[in-house]
Length: 289
Image (tube, rainbow, N blue to C red; front, side, top):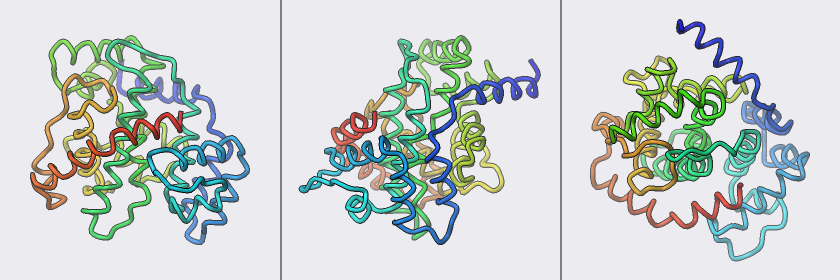
């Protein structure tokens, strides 16, 4: 099948995915607004009582470990930060819109989201330490959604996706994206970016996701964001946090370390940090699910 024909088929399958909760497009518009404040965000989320309740459940989970119970979005905002509340709302809205019943011996939706939460948590920490003062509000959601293309593949291209999974597990390599590209025509990062672009997510998120398995980072993509995403993707796989499809973790690129100006000592610190918050990541998944 020609690449253009594959692309049309992918978009037709993306269009079959149920629409997002109405609050998500509203929040995306808020993200694009320079004048949006905490009241705007809380007011938008409050239009969806089920989502509001879920965010409060997350805020009261062991992931945050607050000593007091958080009973309202108004209280959650200063404690979690408005960007985190916004990211949680978007993340929960996306997860609840996608199928969660497709399983295989080498992959599960639950395992994928646990991995995504670990990557999101590490992206935030890397951003705090090594982003040199740049904007960091998109890091959590970029990390969480970086493998969202696998959900599309598992649901709508299941035979080919299972063949890609079987191939890498038979060979014992961390090359699922290569097998996807060869068998399907696109890897999960590219497909995830197509979905998020269709849903009008900011390019700063979709571009990094599209590029996180590409050899050459496309023009217009933030190289530091991609380097952080690649590192944050590899470390949870080393610890076995989640089940995202690869039988072994990818190697951390020396080029990515160079881009961020960090070395082996900082990577060791990130490994230790991630191991220390493993239980909290599972608690966050349970609260979000």
